[in-house]
Image (cartoon, rainbow, N blue to C red; front, side, top):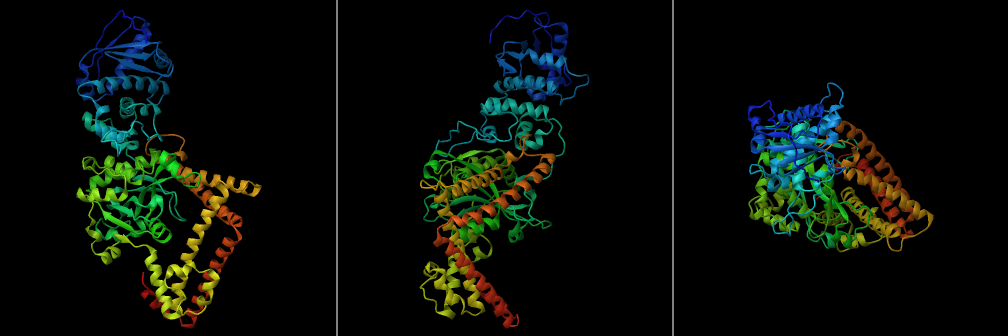
Length: 618
């Protein structure tokens, strides 16, 4: 901006409420101000500095000249250059034009005070007692994360773009500090919306403004909440007994070869005191899982390498994750307890909530995959782990480093049978399917060597044996037919991808309509995977009123998604090749036949023989 030597009509030391603030010397350049403007300027500076913590005041040990000018760019309200604050003259005029008795929520009051606090924040940050924008802990909390392959260097971009109070905070760490100190000083709700940052600033200054009581629990959206399950979960960290590193074992698929990293939350049932018995409350356990939201259904290796897929943090019921990996993908799950104390668990969950509501990262198969995202969550959420050298680009590598650092207790897997009983290991269903095959084979002499060969038979070829089994064999065969249906549905899904979105996708009207409906379902899924999309105002963690609105709107969106998804699933089936349609129908007929046969055998047995079904291997 244009510089000029101010003529001083007065140079004053502004009196403030706190004695320690007398050290702050704000010298008002009055030469271009009317008496009314000068008086208003003094009121503004007095009001702003009165709100600052004593340590902030004491860090500014020299006089600061304050100029109200028209020379700033249109989008800039103030600038701190050396020992001079330049503030927009229009803010001063808006302050004078305020209605009598205007409170802090008055737009002119808020904007003017924010401009002064913002620029004084820059002055403090540059002082010997400041340095906040260079503090590694502040950078962790702010979102300038350490990269896994950058030798401790931080990523240049900040991906915490959602639910931001002001996008200008993402411009640089210095602007992040200044924007957030505005809210720390001026917004009582800041303590609830950004609790970790509020504690950081309070510790730095040794004081904090008063704030109201926060809404209970940490809010998370459950995108796959079932019927009767609340879409918005308010998680109480005091109910989380422990956190496990949850590793889905690898398979032969390119994207799954090294496994998948997640965190399991061992949540105690309501009313149960925290303790080892909480591991039995499986229906309440949750999983934090970073996943790529694939908005075009197909997973492209190139797009995964270039970061075209959004990376989001999901909160999922444990049972859903277990079924997904063990029954559908036939992958085992290792659940390794992490040695974290209560405060570290609370801090980790609080960080996860901020990531859940604010983070919109880019998924990359190598440099920002599930292992890297999980490591960054541990690094940023538990300060002790930031110094442990845990960085890894593979899920198994991260587990090894957690073990070497004494954080992960892999000894729980030493006794495989006990690990399964205690829920430290969830075996892939393939072993269970083989056991069921052997149960049925002992009675029926099935025409296959193993369960894989049995499931490779056409449904009609399996049918004759389905009509011969006793109660025990029929129950085993029913489970295998259900497994066959899941496998056939996966094959059908892949075929639909090819038909609708592949290079040789059909261009007929029916396919175009189906693509349009698929896009609508994916758009709804996208909203539920990015919860900030459901709220039009506010920043940080949602407060009470926002949570109420979110619960209502989110439930409606989830219901729409279920209804549209069911219709799409039904109608898309008609697009499948005849062979696949017939295979699905035949397996469903086999399942219906076995269900009816089991009910009849049960009646004929007098209802007593079902007891021995509990002896079936699991």
